[in-house]
Length: 110
Image 1 (cartoon, rainbow, N blue to C red):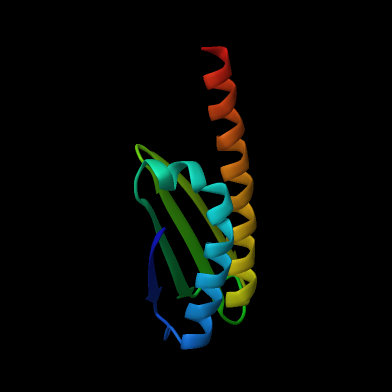
Image 2 (cartoon, rainbow, N blue to C red; image 1 turned 180 degrees about the vertical axis):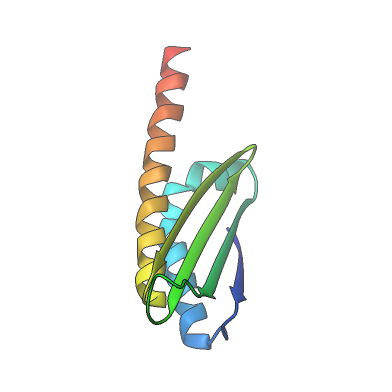
């Protein structure tokens, strides 16, 4: 899997970069079928945003995974960068499981 990490309005420290890489690489077991067919490209963006309704810092994490012609996407905002990263990983994991089940159901019905 090819992973591209982008940081907006914050410094991408080695610790955060490693944390993102570990979380996203844990998803590779759900992507084995698509990695055999071709490249799987993932784009992770972590941004520090301000929102006048919330006090303090707000971190927005977004993950897009391209599986051929399909794209699986997840995003989440939290008051901590690590919480946002964890939640995005959990959301995308559920999306990948659902996508895999739908794909398998379609193949069985053929």
